[in-house]
Image (cartoon, rainbow, N blue to C red; front, top):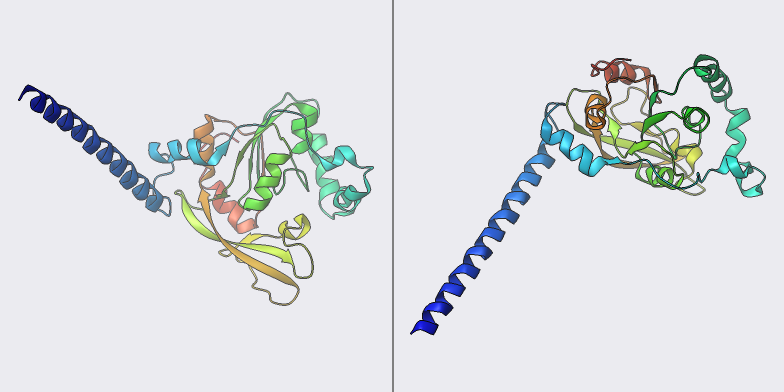
Length: 255
């Protein structure tokens, strides 16, 4: 009789803990599902749940180890085509010179570069990071480009998302440009990526092959809050003018 009571007690305890575990898992699932729905908007850009999610799911800490950059191996014939942007791009050389004129002689600051691509090609912040010791945040919604960015070992925080033009997170459609007759992840083509909501978005069917991807957009203010950053010294927005104005309207930090 006593052994039966002990067995019943053990069974009751095990059953109790089993129910507790099921409850905890179910609660986590429900909370995660609700949060995923809220991430499509609207949810306040300062909501603690959003900030916590950004820290755990979106932000990636600065990389360690040596830089893995094509510019450091410019004599390699494989990298010749890649590095031509340094001299032939219409916008990069003069902009690079302007950045040097403005920030040379100043103490290291904090930058944000949206549309960071692979972290090297047409980067407006690589010089500040490598040569001037700046810290910063690189934002890139294209998953393939973001993975390449991580391989560059940049010493900045990174985020695989797009910047929301609203004061809450939302989902957007990213139009990824690819070479119709070549590799589908060429960085030169991906540099022309844009959101479907952009007034300049064009659905093409002849010159390039386009791939559509649903991406998460987060207010820049939310990303900065998650990083405890209250001052940005240099903000590089590689997005359309109208979207840049909308993005800036969501900020409350000092620029």
